[in-house]
Each structure stands twice: as structure tokens, then as C-alpha cells.
Figure (cartoon, rainbow, N blue to C red):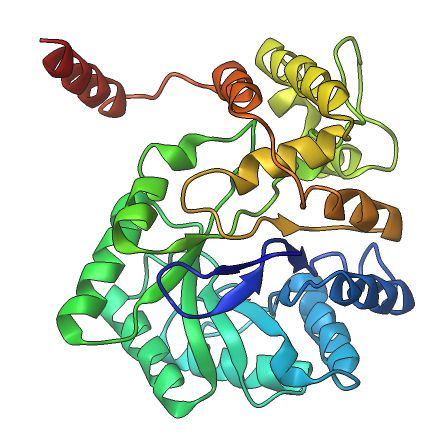
Amino acid sequence: MQYRYMGKTGLKVSELCLGAMTFGRETSEADSFAILDHFAAAGGNFIDTADVYTRGVSEEIVGRWLRNQRRDDFVIATKVRFGMGDGPNDVGLSRKHILAGIDASLRRLGVDYVDLYQVHCYDPGTPLAETLATLDTLVRSGKVRYIGASNYSGWQLQKSIDISQRMGWEQYTCLQPLYNLLDRSVEWELAPVCQNEGLGIIPWSPLRGGWLSGKYHRNMAAPVAGTRIDDATQHGWGEAWDAYANERTWRVLDELFAVAEEVGKTPAQVALNWLLQRPAVTAPIIGVRTMTHLENNLGAVGWALSQEQIARLDAVSATKPPYPYDFINGAVGNRLRG
């Protein structure tokens, strides 16, 4: 496992991040410990969880595992925004909820600080300045080392950066967005912001819940029983069957399988390797349920797709951007040609 700097910071993280969303839900504590052990043995030092994952159980499992590790060897990331209580202040990015959230996360993790504290989603009910000032306070207090954002729009991310710069507050060091071969809208605005401002990108759902894992292919009529896509279809989650079972997905998967055969890798490994080579990407977050999933995903590092193979995957997965991106791209292209 190689290590990469998180954006423009001096923090080094493994090129794959282990997501702990399944811990305590699909994955037992014993299996979670085994997965964490194997990830660490492979050189992984970056672990991502959130306060709401399994209603705090994920953080507790990571914390109990950490008790038998050297704490400073690992970069532990968690999140705040969505609540587990019923009170009016048990959700959001207000000063009150963030301060309560970090203390609760530290208790569950059994640590004095978290390396990366991320806002889980934009909160339209709280002024950005209130959120950012509070996060700055957490860094200054020593409870948090770095801060990041997840599920922001382009203007929300840029405005946050501008406010923090103007006020001399700690700035976001990374963005955690949905990003994979089937979901590339992050490239229209969010990725350019990250590149221009020096933020690392740590994509969630790099295999889109299993669509890019190798289990799905053209001519299938329904999701594989018991898989994440099956669950998503039953619960109406974003990666549900009806949302992706279309000709564009089948074309992407056809090319993904073809490239995988050429390089002697699995489709999942190719999809992750493609993402690892995207501009500003620091570490895709692999959300595994089993040791088999982890071992497969770890095979995505230590090699590289050729530029020709990347170009083929780029082309087949490209989507026409909406206005104004299409207009701007066309205007720039016409000017350059002129």
C-alpha cells in the first residue's frame, strides 16, 4: 500500500480508505476486527466511520479495535450532521450539535482526538460561519486534527473555503463525494474546486454498492439476492436496480469486463484503479462486508491501467454535462479552435 498526502496538507494516508459503515450491521464485531487487522497488515492506515453508522455501533467497534493498536499509526475519520435523538437540536450543523457530536464520537471511539472530522452533508438551517467557526474551535482545542466536508454542492464548498480563508479559520482539507465510473457529475464543478483549492477527494461508494464489483452484467433482469443492490431496491436507496439497470450502465460494464480481462484483474479492481488515477483523488473508501471483499479490493493497488485503457473507460462512462457546463465547455472549445 502506498501513501498519499491529503490534499495540500502534510497528512499521509493509505491510498485506500477502509469504510466502517457495515460494522455492527452486515458485519459482526469479530469479522470487523479481522477486516481491520488484515487492512492494517496490508499497510492501510485510513479508517472512515460516522456517528450515525449503525447508530454509533460502528464507532464503538472501531474504538474497541483501536485499544490494542498504536493510536498514532492510524488516521481515524468520522462525521457529524445527522442525529440519533428526537430532540430539535439532535441534528444539523449548529454549534450546539457539533460540540455534542464530537464529544459523543470521542467517547464511542475511546480516543482523545479524531484525525479527520467531516460534516456529513450541507445544513441549510445553519449559517456556514457558525459551522466553520465551531470546527475551527475543535481544531484549536486539540479534539480534531483536520476537517472535511461530504455531500456539498460546488457553491457550498467554495463559499465555505472563502469564509474560512477570510476569517483565518481552519479550512476543509478534503471532500467525500459520490464518485465512480457510473457517477461522474462530481467532475462538473466539485472536482475543479478541489483541484484549485488543494482539497483531497475521498470518494464514497467507488463500486456503487456493487454495480462495479463484477456481479452485474448485461441481460440480467434483477439484482442478486442478498446483495447491497437487492437491499437498495427494497428500501429505495440511491443504487437501486431501477436507477442503474439501463443501456449506459451495460455499456460501462461491458468495457469494464473487457479491460479486466486484458489486465488479468477483477472488474472491482479495475474500477478502483481507474478512480485512483483521477485528478485530486486521494483515497477511495472501500466499504466491505466480508474478508473476501477486502482481499479483492486490496488488489486494486500496486499496478496501473494504461493510458489507452483509461481513455476507453473515460469515453464509455462519459455523460453529457448539463447547462451551464456544456455551454462553457463549448465556448472554450470554439475559442481555442478559432
